[in-house]
Length: 232
Image: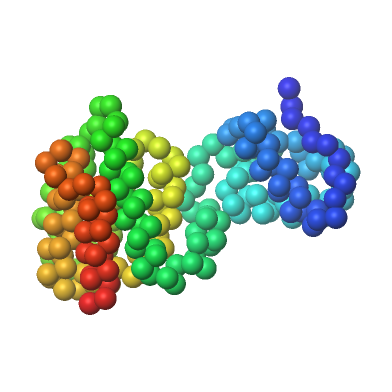
């Protein structure tokens, strides 16, 4: 049965209220990825509003990657959000990202959460993460630019993210790495390349049960490690 919406009766900006309605329907499960939305004309009639706020709301939802417009078919809730779409989480966190120490602290606690989740996962594929690490050993060298070295470093963390098979963690993790990436300029020193590889080896040892660090101690060590690299 096609979804319908109640008429609006609000003092808020109408276009934002329409966006809120779509969001609420996604949260409560009335709308699901792949569902077809009412047409522009139907939205105008159902909500009792003019064409302008409906079009504004559609543009906002499309820019956020929430809906996808298929020519000749209509509007649909996006099934697989594109990484090219606007990520509002990034912009909401940018205001806090100037506090580098808090950003590093949050990142490391988050990564320990990832590791602990992986330790409880059935059929954990450590081999895939280890393959990325071995590739880094071969490819990381001082002749590469800082940007190239950062990209190679993040391949490891993205591999850890993907192995969780958890879209919530994956999206938050990608946001964290995007925020911290511009600050990862310490790779221009060969000694920090070695330190990065040592950190990744610690990750692997932790996953394999070889690391006798308590999680709290591991967090402190990782935070100190990253702070020292950024300060240099």
